[in-house]
Amino acid sequence: MIPVSPVKRADIDVPVLIVGGGGAGLTCSMLLSQLGIETLLVSALPTTSILPKAHVLNQRTMEILDDVGIAEAIYAKSTPAENMSAMGWYAGFAGADPEMGRLIAKLETWGGGYTNVNWIQASPCRSANLPQIRLEPIMKARADALNPGGVRFHHELTRLEQDDEGVLAWVLNSDTGSEYTVRARYLLGCDGGRTIPRLVGIAHEGLGVIAQTATAHISADLSKLAKDPDVLIRWIWCPAIGEMAVLVPMGPDHWGPDSEEWVFHVTYRGEGPKDLTDDQIEQTMRLALGIPDLPMKVHKVTRWALEGVLASKFRAGRVFLVGDAAHRHPPTGGLGLTSGIQDAHNLCWKLAAVLKGEAEKALLDTYEAERRPVDARNIQRSMENSMAHMEAGAAFGLNPAASAEENWAQFRRILSGRPDDAGFRSGALRAIRRLSMEANELNVEYGYRYQSAAIVPDGSSLPEAIDDIRLYEPSTFPGSPLPHAWLDDEAGNRLPIKDLVKPGRFLLIAGERGEPWCSAALALAAEHGLPIDAVRIGHIDGDLFDPRLAWAQFRGISDKGAVLVRPDRVVSWRHSGAAADPQGVLGEALRRVLAHRVVPTDASAAEQTPAE
Image (cartoon, rainbow, N blue to C red; front, side, top):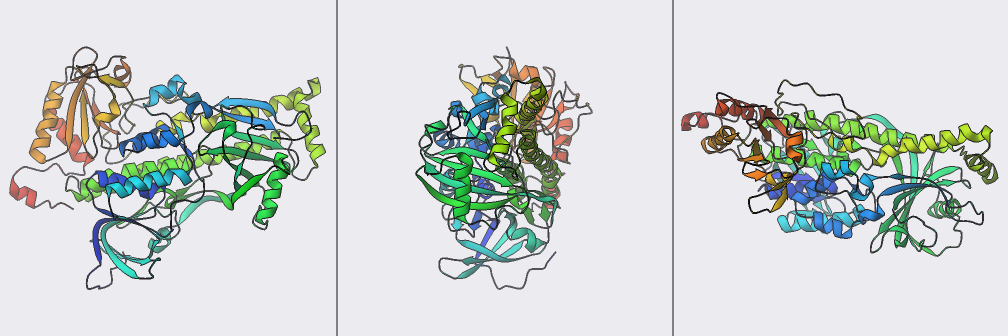
C-alpha cells in the first residue's frame, strides 16, 4: 500500500471516484447514483467515443441498462430486430464477375431477432445493436441527469496514492490547465487500462496480440449492393486481397442495406496495417469490396490490435479495475463491452452496501472472485471466435500471397459440383457452421455461475450442460442469474420477475406456501436494517402469480421453499422446502453473503461493529 502524502485538504471529498467515461465508467456512475452513493467521474478524453467501436449489447446487458432507465432510448436508436437476425458469408461484394456478391451461407444470430424460444425464455429484453459512438452519449446524458456536475470529461487523473482509509488523486482540468485533488474512499479504474493498472502495479496476462486490424468508418450508399436486409454482419470472402473482410451497418437513421454509415474491418496476419497510410487502407477496402469509384466519405481510419488479456488481479487496495482496464477481448462475439457493464453491475451494489454499513468490507473481495473467472471465459470465447474466422478463411482456400484469379479458382471448387471437390465444399461449409457459435452463445452470456463467499451452496450438484456454449438452461442453482418469468398481480397487470429486484435490495422469493420464509425475511430486515423484500409466487396462490408456469419450471424449490436473490439479480441462497427455524436459517445465509454484517440488535454490540 502506497501511503498518501500529507496534504492539507483535498479539494473534493467523495465516496467513489470513477476514472474513465466509456461504457463501464458511465454504467458505474449511473448505478451508484441510483443507489444513493455520491461519485465523481473524470475522463481524460474530451468527449464520449468518436468511433463506432463495440456495438452488440446482449440481453443481460440490456437488462442492466433497463435498470438505469435507458433501454428504451437505446432500442429507439438500435438496429431493428429484423435487421440483426442473421450473419452472412459472401463471395466478394461487388464487381463484374456474375458470382461476385453471391451468398455462400447465412446463419441465425442473437435469437433470430428475438424469435428463438431459448432467447425469449432467457429475458424480457432482446439484444440490441448500437455502436458506442451513439450509445455513450445516451449513457452520459443519463449519468449527468442522475449526478449533475459529477461527470467531467477532459479531466485527467495524473497521479494517485492510497492508504488504509482511502485514495488521493490529482486531476488535471485539460480545458483550463488547472489541477485539483480528490479524496475518495474507493476508486474505480474504468479507463481501458491506459493509466490506472500501471499506477497501482497490476499487470495483464494472456496471449496478447494475435493479429492486427484496420477499420474504416464510412458513409456510402451501398443499398444496391448489400443484399439480405436480415443480415447484420457480412463476412466477405475477398479474392483480390486473399483475406476475409467484415462489413457492418452503423445506421444512424436507417438499417440493413439502407444504412447511411458502415464500418469495414480487415484483419491482417503478420505485421498488419501499422505501416499503411489511411489512403492505402481506403484503397485496400475499395479493392476488397470491388467499389473503386463508389462515392463515399471516410470518417476515420483506425488500426488496432486483436488481443486477449486479463488483469492478474482486479483490485489493489481501494482501487478496483472494471471493464477494459481488467480485460480486453477480440470483438468477435460482442463480449467486451457487455463484460464491462456486467462487471459494474456486480461491483456497485457491493460498494453501496459497504458504504451504507449494510455489509462488511470483506464483501468487496467477492468482486474479483466472481467476475475474473467469467471474464476469463469471455476472453477465451472471443479468442476462439476470432481463430474460427481465420480457420474459415483457410478452409475457403484464401491466400493473401496468391493472385485474385488463383483465389477465385479455389472458391469455384465450392460451387463446382464435381465429386473431387465435394470434400473441399463440405469443409468450407462446416467452418461456417462452426461460426454459428459466435452469435449463438447464450450459455456464455447467461449460464455462468458465481462462486464466492457471497454465494451460499445448498449441497446440490450442478447438472452437466447439454451445450456449454449455445444452450442456456435457466436455474436457481446458487450463483446463477435469476431465471426470467412473466408474472401477474391480482389485477392482471403483467411484469417481468426481474423488476421485483429493486436497486440495492435483496429479494426473498418463496413458494406459494412459504409464508414463514417471508415473515423471517421481513423480521430480519426490521431488526437489522437490511434491505430485503419478500414475495410468494405461485400459479394459483401467492402474492404474485405465475400464469405460464415459467417460474415453477426453473425455481428449483417446493411450494414451501425459498430463494434469496441479490441486488444484482444473482441467486445467493436457496432452501428447497420448509425449515424449523426459518429466521435463523435465513439470517445465517445473509450473515455469510454480507460478510458477517447481520449483528445483534443491542446498541453496544452495534457500536463494536462499525460500518465502513
